[in-house]
Image 1 (cartoon, rainbow over the protein chains, first blue to last red):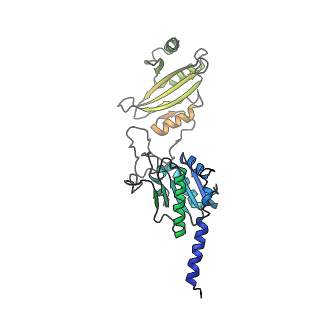
Image 2 (image 1 turned 180 degrees about the vertical axis):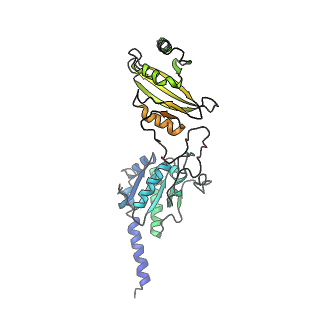
Length: 172
Length: 164
């Protein structure tokens, strides 16, 4: 009656539904965006409404890394190391313009977009983005998780990224 | 009162180091004295240990790139005296080929990290520094980024990124 394929796809949907409603974030707060990230976790914006209130400070217990802040070349190695320690499947939110494109730091020491060394799933513009924008990013990510996408396939953009279509092109 | 103190400091320096004090500038009633780099440690020690002057705090030490053919690099010492509530600056210059300045870590311990910063950003070698490593940039980095001839966006491939 119930074919194998039918059951498998439904099971995957159920698993994805579970995953998307309990995304544990790794708060990679490197600079001022971290303040907005903390506000998003606080009672006013309350990221718990989307099942992501469990900020884990060990990457081994996390599903999504929120890179919130200016990433320098020196810090890039640390961010990558933390990303590598996260269990699969894993997602990346690039929060703020510094993280997404280098932002106002057009300079030798700042990585012009973390997509040079990480597969980014959602880019969030703003300097810093409001907590609402982070929640928006999380909801977009939930849609991606439900569709079973990860590793930076079809990344979503929040904000105006026109003219920044190739982040990092200045340094690569 | 500031002028009095400026004149007093300058007089003390001129009598103590006759001929070594080549130039002095006063701007917005703050004194800047140019000192040859061979005498900088002596001058600093005198300013710190003289019971009247007592410049016991090295508030900042920084490098500067004048982008000139002679005396290209400089080091600026911002001094403060807690007792007299008084500030002054020392400046010393060095050549482009071998930018060397004697260290003042023996006078103020706080100069240690400041001199490492100036070394990292400008490549000024502080002779006799106990631990002259880079302080901001990675150890394997080969350039000095605050020099005027360093491009703003850096040099391709000079800083490594992890693989995607």
